[in-house]
Image 1 (cartoon, rainbow, N blue to C red):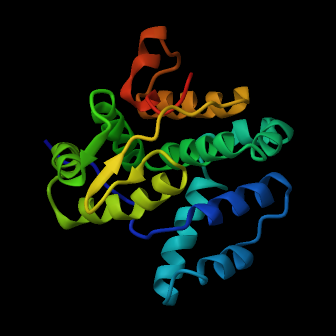
Image 2: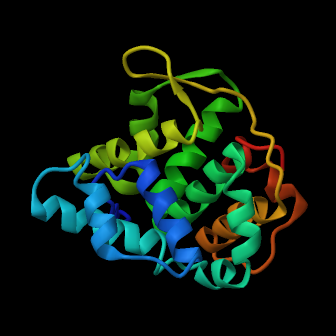
Length: 206
């Protein structure tokens, strides 16, 4: 079986996605400004270009873009709530990059039965889909800090990650985007109630 493509090859800080999304919803998105933000944590023009590609794929070229366009006021309001903001950014990341979706789902699978998981266990599980090469490991280290900033998990020592508990999400639009990212990655038009028990949704009260 051919391994899936990781496609995400540069760490972009959570805050860059947040600022880019707010600017996009306010019709004020600027690639030059995004690059300025990227330069705060990334060195080298090649890496900046990689970072910009990732931001564009998550924000301006997201598969869920029509939902963003149709719900600008609701999303901007939801972005003022910490948990909602975290879920919205993560949902968009997972919609843009299936690797991020499967990584979150894998963490959720183990957090269903234990509070702490070793990254080696996650890497082994991910390798079944993406192969055991360095690209997949690098992908984890590109996505992982975004999940950590979104409080999907917290570090609990070297190579250990702890489940902080389910998030209380206030807005319907945050839940909608998360559900739509699930449907997109599963190529389904509808979602069954039983699917809301999927490990992907382990991180919020849905």
